[in-house]
Length: 212
Image (cartoon, rainbow, N blue to C red; front, side, top):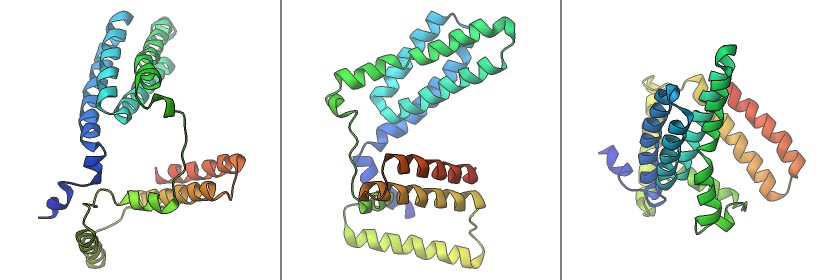
């Protein structure tokens, strides 16, 4: 009954199906990337480019997750590699970086919105609050309110009855989320400039560290 609320929502309209498919494909691609560490560099590059392009056309965020994990896995391998394998580990790091070049070229030069890829648009503060509820919104105001009240009531009852506990990392994650929302609002409202944004970003990052 509860799962009905998650069958259709704004995230599906916004392309979350492609993202979910891309995340699964990302894990498969990362597994293949790690298993191919003993292959010649040109073979790894070919497989990496195919995987990167497949992820790019699935969802750009899925490609970003794969690119970050593949690059930092090779970076860790470079750090731990003995001197006799240092050259090969550096080759793997270079291949990990090069496999992301074709998707980025497609983004900036071939995508219909490629010219807007470098633009930053600040939306209103309340639109960010509204975005947090996208997993629940189904374009029907009364149903949205009823569902939100149901989930809030069930959560409060679980906390009061001791059947639902909030781990400390989750609390810090909520604090970090509120901190980032406050910083974004301050930047949008003009309360801080570029330097203030940089300083507050360091503070927000410390909140993320506390969440870990």
